[in-house]
Length: 98
Image (tube, rainbow, N blue to C red; front, side):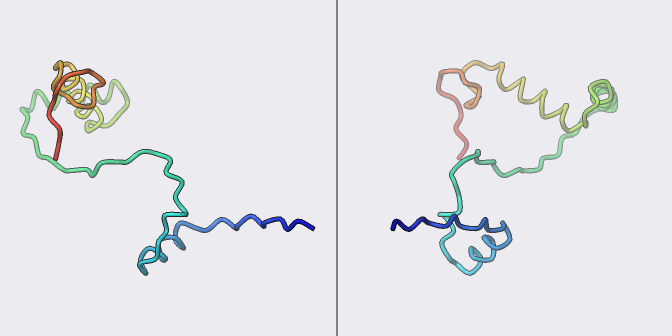
């Protein structure tokens, strides 16, 4: 008679984290799906009061945060420069962060 394998019970993320903290290999729990998220770095930007009012109005009109407006505008500006922004999907040699 053929033996059937029991499917393994799902393991919680906390349990996997505890194993990793003990230095155990947890790679077999990971499926390799998803995307890598780059670390966030904070920056300070000085803007005029009138620019801040424009940003706040745009954020209010779009029903998003001021930060979302700033990030979107910066991304659009970077992508509009041909061959400069590496993640724009454009061909060309651009800056590669190190």
